[in-house]
Length: 523
Image (cartoon, rainbow, N blue to C red; front, side, top):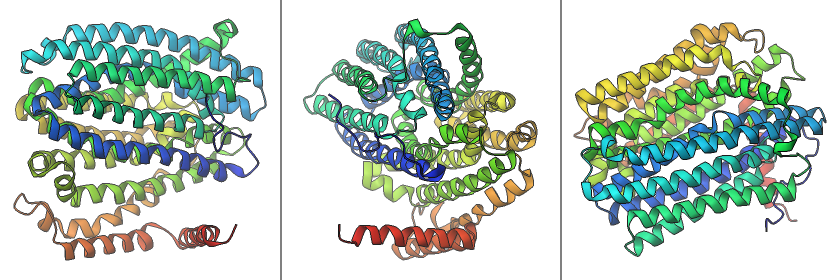
């Protein structure tokens, strides 16, 4: 049974800002849950599993996750079209597009099963330096995890409907339960000295239950949006397929940027796999925060595009880019400057010493690459992602090619450097080419967007740059407590007075006062 959840009632008028705020809150709740799991689980596994076994486990999860890339933008397409047709009050249109996405996702699930079996078969060839005694359990776990995620692909369409209806609390609650269950069951298996195969069985069980929960939630809360093979319209199916074909290029780019790193490290430098995987977790957390803020922009921008002018969309992009840049820099600089003491407290000094060099490069790359994430989200929402195809392909080729080449020369650190190189290519090409072709949809001066959206927030980095000699060299790795306080205060002051204008500061203070009064006033 799926209980009534906050946010599941019909949307009341409140404007785009109120809707986005509620959905961001729901997404942030999921981020908190994922963050807790990301803090507890790796620390426990790193202390209770041998390094080679832990490396094998993260590679199992990585190979299984490749199934998720077969989404091919279908979930995004369903949420986009459901949002548009729901805004028009066209219930039949929402059902036809959701059903078309369902049909496409069934094909994706079948492809996922085939991919899973192929990856399991090739495990000894992919990871030749992995201890041979691990191959059997790794193969079984890859099959179990990958198959359950293939089932989850199909069920994800039901959650996409809620995203399109901008009722985020339902899918976010299911995601939170999934993460908590995943952590609890893996911890239990490891505590009982279970094998890698037993861990794979446990994760597969959680994934299947999560998929079933998504279907049940749709039946109880959104069944007015029909999802049925019999309701598939051939014309709508072709339209959805065209949209997803462009989205799939972007997903291929994401695969090359963030999805193949661990596999490449495992192939060329297996002994560093566990340390590199730890370094990716804080960057994943950073991306989760970003996703919680960016995610609600997709359906909101889709609805806005039917009601707002291109210049209004451009103003919205400028504000969104500046806010996201501020968030990325504050979070990213904290991880870069204070990364070593945080790692030492989290996973111990041995792991921290091996991990910090990867962490700093990956965080830097993540911040640079995602500076244009609001723009990328908005052009997807307005159906103009085709203009960014060359950018996505170029970044993917540069990232993958340089990562493989540098990994063959320098090992795991080469993979991180390849990711950094690709991030610069992405931002440069968006400004140089993509924005030229989307000017009629999102009208804004590129120089103004660069200066106000990116360069102004970049002032936040000044205190970190000034103190580089005190925290970057291997001999130091961390600031003293006094200098850490000075760095934090000066960074926040620069962010407040340098990155935000007076109107935004006044609005932030008003918002905080309202929240404090709402919290302290008697009910």
